[in-house]
Length: 433
Image 1 (cartoon, helix red, strand yellow):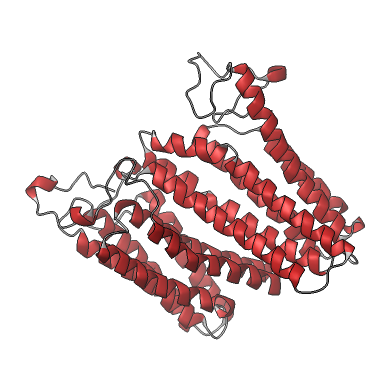
Image 2 (cartoon, one colour):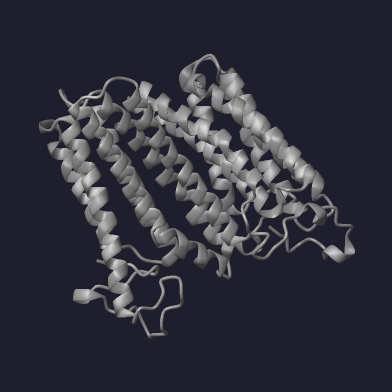
């Protein structure tokens, strides 16, 4: 992010350039150290999934969501930081090692974050956020990037007081209220440009990120979440001698995970990465499509992973409200998040995703009459059909545009082209049907 009120860098000693990430194709590459850094958050996702499974109540789900928002924010701010700063520079690597230590400690405290480990969790989270930002503030103090990082530090210091205050508070309700306020302040800050007394505010046009790098980092986090689902299904299957229903639950779980991957990665992920990389305002897309909307899809994968574990443990018998909520809520969150993602990047919804959400809602109405395995199969079938529908839509697009490659530019036209049966094509090439 740059600051229009700052003097030109030529008039000020610039301390940061040696630490900054080179731009261009080579600079956009995700480094091996960034992949190593993500291992901490593989553990965090696993912790959140297990916590939701053990506290499958409305209150437990709300607490897990709050913790997920904190974990995502810790990872996402580091993602933005490494978008500007070179992870291969020794100083940046050492900073990231410190972030990993705090992140691993934070992840370990997640199961007891609303209990006896509250202060340890809040302390690790705030140390991660504040420590990383202080580092970059010092590095950019005389650089044009510096003013914006000073704003960010302010909007992390204020919520940090609420995190620590909530951890020290007597009473669960007071702690929850303070932590909710802290999350709200943190998540609202980018929307008002980190408006700070005496320092002003930023605009998304000044957030000069590398769009391709941002897209790839978020794609890798989706892979992390999907990998955690695969880990759950494999570990659950190996925990006991499988029966026929358990094996069926295993197959359904894995096929559903593959379908989620297919929906996200088969076409949309690459097309969106190209779109943000060529956008005149990549900061706006980085904020909306990646920073905020991707968390909805990640939440859907985590919730669906809980359903995978539950259906393999108890494929038959009584249908509980908790299982119905995760079996249908996981796919619904992912599909809704993906629809919002397509809307933010390409500017349109596809009716196929709305139809899938309506079918999942209809399944909720008949869920009490089904076994857990039957409901899980139905939910997975919705995701599989949506993935197959997307494949068909892309094939129809190729025919409509004369075999134009999906990643290439579409022919110029005065308006959206007509799709089959009067439908229109979405911005990424999928039909609007």
